[in-house]
Length: 469
Ligand SMILES: *Cc1c(COP(=O)(O)O)cnc(C)c1O
Image 1 (cartoon, rainbow, N blue to C red):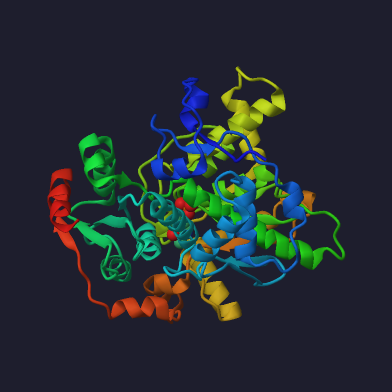
Image 2: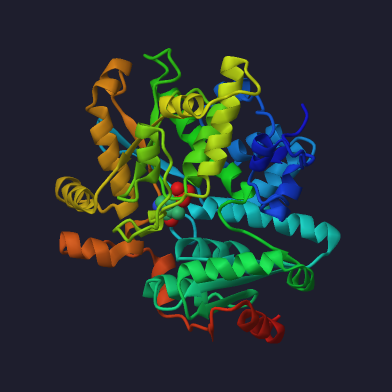
């Protein structure tokens, strides 16, 4: 089988052909040279492999199998196994909450959020490649909290890689700030006297400046990197495989699991859609948004209207113009082309119809998030994070709908995106008691911080970097 290759989302719309690139190259580039996002030129067909995965396959084995199947020219079986063993020192945990809701816990990694899966895989690939060429790179990334801590943990002590994280002063939680500033060694935290948008703008400007790019050999690890998306598809397959083997005795249909993904930038759900395109037998997926409801509105109306984001209790999902929407749109444009055998004149309506068929989306208010957190705590004595709460609330609502009844969906698998301990202030306000803080988070509270305060300009940034790197 030929390895999967990637092309820019801009190509399909502009017809401006850049050559497709391999996985490793797409990872190091981050963004395509034309400013588009990478997505697979053609979908690998993995259905036979997926439906014959053994019952007790470990997450590492499964990740290695899929990696090798997708990228056989870049990773031999053995290389894929080494890579996944290096990356995944933690794994997803699937358990049942009640008859309706299964929880897929994705927060057992070092920073206690699902972003650890993408960051760990990306860093393992980058380190392995750089050890061959002995090249040095600098990863520059902006964070509003969660991404930065996953990246800091994943790249800590990696050879040939320095990481510079920009975060907005006073706008990340004290615990998040500790997670960024106390890691040390090859991880440098810059406290920017501005907003998250300023940080993102500085990163963008730096990447557009060839002199800066060459001087530091800049690379990106932000969430639009395809290297972070690919490993996030593995846990959909992993959970599906466990459920399928549990239920096989009395179900011969493979496709009756409904995943629900709490979504902000829509990367995590795009990973589930990729798995579906490769042949994971699922038909529909639920997207749970907080009150920032641009995508649910698009799916119900057909009109996409990006907005400025506003703050909610599920703050890692406060996104008003999700960057992965462009990727989803392109995927469904391709799908519409195959379904209608029409290569040139696909209409917006046809693309919308395809996407709205697969994705059920709901926007969940802060009030509903609070109610859900409290209800689960009172009924089961368990704490859930505000993002997971949007997923549970949306799933319950969808399972009650005529749509679900008609399709005989009785259960949903909710992706639990963060550990409740990460949001203990919010949860304590709602429940009156604190969720336990895992020791890997607790330890940060006692560590020494080190960061460099700078003005929100690229020049202030390079002045500090010249001294540090
Ligand atoms: C990043 C994040 C999300 C949103 O994921 P997307 O891929 O941006 O849709 C949800 N929950 C938590 C805890 C996160 O950190």
